[in-house]
Each structure stands twice: as C-alpha cells, then as structure tokens.
Amino acid sequence: MKKIMIKDMPNHIGETVKIGTWLANKRSSGKLAFLQLRDGSGFAQGVVVKEEVGEELFAVAKGMTQETSMYVIGEVKADERSSFGAELNVTGIEVISPAKDYPITPKEHGTEFLMDNRHLWLRSRKQHAIMKVRNEIIRATYEFFNENGFTKMDPPILTGSSPEGTSELFHTKYFDEDAFLSQSGQLYMEAAAMALGKVFSFGPTFRAEKSKTRRHLIEFWMIEPEMAFVEHDESLEVQEQYVSHIVQSVLKNCKLDLERLGRDTSKLENVKAPFPRISYDEAIEFLHEQGFDDIQWGDDFGAPHETAIANHYDKPVFITCYPIGIKPFYMQPHPERDDVVLCADLIAPEGYGEIIGGSERIYDYELMKSRLEEHNLSMDAYAWYLDLCKQGAVPHSGFGLGLERTVAWISGTEHIRESIPFPRLLNRLYP
Image (cartoon, rainbow, N blue to C red; front, side, top):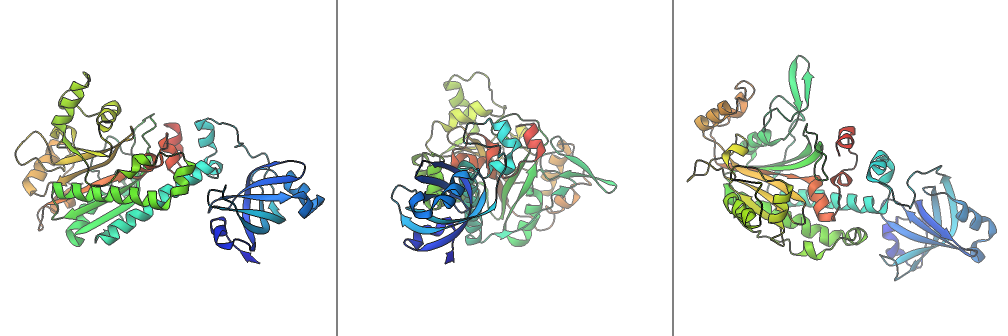
C-alpha cells in the first residue's frame, strides 16, 4: 500500500492508498460519514460507508473531533464534483491524536479572535490558499531574478543607519552602540550592485509606526533589487515585467487556491506589461478634477487618493516624479527640474495601494554629501555609503516591493495581516 499526499490523489485513481491527515470538518447520517480531510498539500473528502466498514469503524468516524490527526486508508475514486477530481472511499482509520476543544469552529469568528489563534487559523481553507499564493509569489520572484542575471544578497537586520531617517525605526543597543531594526536593505544593496551589477534581497523589514489600517504592518517582508548602469525608465520596465511575471505565475499555478478564495481572476489576467504611467503633477490635476480638495501640490497621497487614481485603470499604474521634499535623501533629482526626483510608486488596483516604491539613486559625491547634510544625517554613520560615490560610482536604480501587500492584492484578501504567516505581537497590537 502506497502512502501519498492529498494533492497526488488524481494520479492514483482506483488504487488503495494511505494518507496522513487532519479532520477539518465532518457530517454524517445513519449510513454515511463525510470527512473533510487536509494534509497541508490540499483538501479532500473521505466517504465512510457503514455497510462497508462495519459498526466499530463507522462509530470512530462519526465520533472524531475537528482537527483530530489520523491515517486514513481507502480507494481513490474519480469525482467530478471535487475541485481536483478525486475523493477517498475510506476503509480504514488509524487515529493518531484527538483534538480537544478546538477553538476555531466552522462558524464565523472576528479577525481579532482569529489573529489571537493564528497558530491554528493557518489550518483553515482560506489561510491555506493565501499561504499557497504567497509561496508562489516567492517562488516566481526567485525565478524572475535568477533568469534575469540578478545575484541574491542578504543585508543585515540590525543596522546603524537608515535610508529613510530614524523617526520610524525600532531602537536597540548593539553592545555599547546604537542600532536599529532594518527599515530597508537598500543601502547595502547599492554597495552590492557596485560589485555584482544586478542584485536583490528578500528579508524582513520594520516600521515603528502605529498604523491601524488594513494595509499596514509593523513587520513585513521586502524584495529589494538594485541595478548598476540602469536609469529610471529602464528600472520601470524591470518593475512591470517582474510584477507581470508573479501575477501570471499565480494565475497559472494557484488556480484552485484563487478559486477557494473567490478571487475574480479576470482582474488579474490583464496585469501584463506595459503599465500606464502618470506624473505626480498629472495625478494632482486628476484628483482635483475628481473633486478632491484636500490635497495640494507637495502633499503625499493618502489611501483615498491612490484608490481614486488606481480605479481609473485596469492594471497597476506608475506615479512618477514626486516632489523632492516628500521623498528620501538618496533619490536622483530630475535633470530638467529642481523640485522633483526621478522616482515612481506602483499603485495596485482595487484599493490595495502602493506595492512598489523605487527611484534612480544619486551617485554624485558632492550632491550626496549635501543631501545628507540637508536631512541632518550623521556623516559618520553614512561614511561608508558616501564612500560609494567616490569609488567608481555609476548611474543606478532600485526598488522595493512589499510582499504582504502584494499577496493581499493578488489573493483578494481584505486584511493585510492575513498575508503574513506569523504576525509578531506588535502587528497584533496595531492592526
């Protein structure tokens, strides 16, 4: 008898197999018990027929509690009603460990209750599907960058400086020195790009801001590429190709998961490069035409503004060339204007907001030095970064994609906290 996983059942039609599973749910009548089984690879139905298995085994099937672990033995049968075309005619059950008072029942629960039981909530069909989508985005990310000549690098999580300043950093001590949880690996990736040409990192980042919204997390994961000899417009092309690649990969490889989530895939099928581009100036003008009187040139966009702009398009949209006063110190000024920089935010459709922020980077030594001074940043802390501008500096660009917000958008998830496997306590305190 072969031990298989649920996802492999369609390849074993007519065979008797053994599967290690948990009981996700069940229903029964006087003669039949329908077991909803899961094993991490997927979900399947097991049917227990009383006349075929006898009183004793049927009583075991009817009496098992939700999330009891077991081995089930049975014949795999074709079933067109199943999402993947197979079910199990159960002939044997070996209970491994019963579950007691499992708190997440099939009834509706509030988000706070579910987040308090996140270690168990991950077992649900919806969370299983979201995590599969997340995993596919990560897999496709490595595929894209590996196929396009990027080298994976790992910046430190404890840092002595920040790309964005220190107002939103978690402070700690590194022996006798000040240190911070990383806000971004960008500066280190710029150094790596000067050595390896095209690089990317993928790791946790932190923001010390109490944002009670469905779109923000205090700890999240970022994909951050940096590219030497790549200017602003070239970087935008890489960004739209990358986002197109991960969306199309999810559509191809996560069909059942998107179906389980009730995702309208027609809204994803059109996500293919090129993406529309509008300038910050044009965005402000558009918002005024739409009746927004709460924003003026020089202000940053809020969620309602981004949503209004995104709703005007059927795919992600770039907003380019923001005012210099609302962007970080390292962004390259526009060659024909001194009030904006060569940058772009990529806004996802359907109200999910910014998923990418990127720019061309400053590489002129004197300009970088003056920008550090303007932002009152420590020359000692940034000495190594400033040194990059003296040692064969070249035009270069990069961007950062927030994984969780991207997962939320592609999966159609309402709350971003559902997109991270194990939110830290801080993410629960400030949802």
